[in-house]
Image (cartoon, rainbow, N blue to C red; front, side):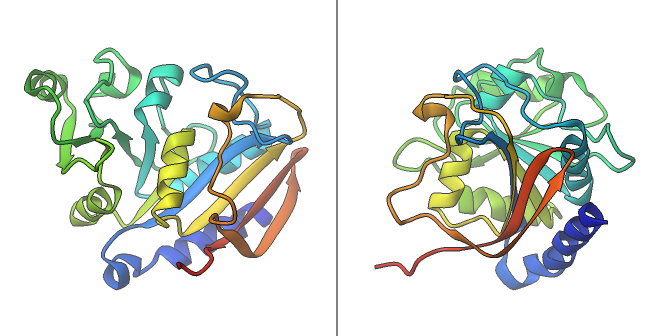
Length: 239
């Protein structure tokens, strides 16, 4: 079965990765339209995956220790980030939230037996940390980058110290672009839905001209009417 082989391959690649690299194995997985859009309008969710590829996404979630999204995804989609469409364990939810903007009534904050981790950058308001922790969240703080964002290599190291060996990243666009720019993606699974959406630039994954990776020896399959591509990203040489 194609899906089982894909998931097993990721699990095999992730084994021992922390010991070799000092950070978790990172899988990027997202769905886009045939014209490259993740949504039609920024801040508004759009269901692109079919039922079979949705099941694949949940199999991938169950195969990873943690699942990572940006605060924009939490605010717009209010996701649960659980495994529901297949049998499997729920990954640890991690939200990149530099200023601790997470709504305290969001689904991730209302699950006491599954404490959400918030990756924040120094400089957030202290009262926000107190409020988040009082509501059950755990704050992982890094130094702020020059753009005032979370230091991605640092937060991945913190996750490795917390026994997270593999992370699945589901978005949004800025998170995907930031991880690509830092070359912190180890495997890619992209679902392409047979629809034209026509979204604007802020709902499309973009990289600097010729600076983005290509997928080495990628594989692909038609799953439930969607085209799924997967493989290892390879970046051009620096300089």
